Length: 118
Length: 110
Image 1 (cartoon, one colour):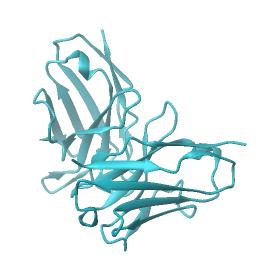
Image 2 (image 1 turned 90 degrees about the vertical axis):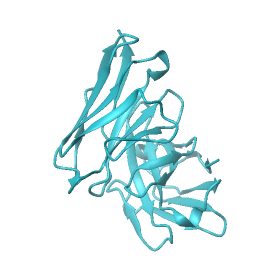
Image 3 (image 1 turned 30 degrees about the horizontal axis):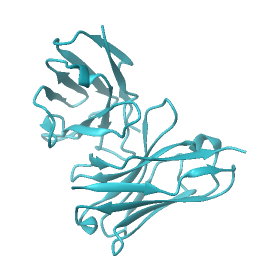
Image 4 (image 1 turned 180 degrees about the vertical axis):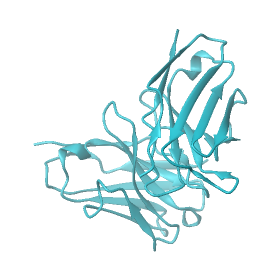
């Protein structure tokens, strides 16, 4: 059974940093591209970042480019999102998702809440 | 960026057909491959993949869900609607980065 379990969320002040983790199991992690998708309270879904299966290619949404870094450790089957210079508008539930071959997200974690507030 | 437009709310009766539309600001198809996907999200839960590449049913999804469309116009159909289908539905394109989502359609009971 595919499982994605996020951790690392919480309350953080504006301008500070936070690192999210996503532990994957039930599939060969190193065979799949992965992504982070977020959802602000009562809002829709926003793609944040993606990373290729080997980790060499990364892509970011315009709203986080230059502030967030996606990475992975295939030996640990874990995906990361380093979030720097956090803003109030980054407040959201962050989902880890596995990407299918055509760019869809076929499995999602339960999500982790990040609140940016003073 | 490719903008995906969805109606905010659709009211339906149980047992009837629900048709949810998604219009893209430019084509999301490459040759015969339609890079449009659909998700269901219930309150407090993560999204779930329903349909990929416009018309392919994801694993474990009931056959009352179906998808169609090409180019810029796509449709998710639920027939017949059951009580468990009351949720928000999102379309998503993977034709171009950023891989944008529609704002979602909330399916409500009439």
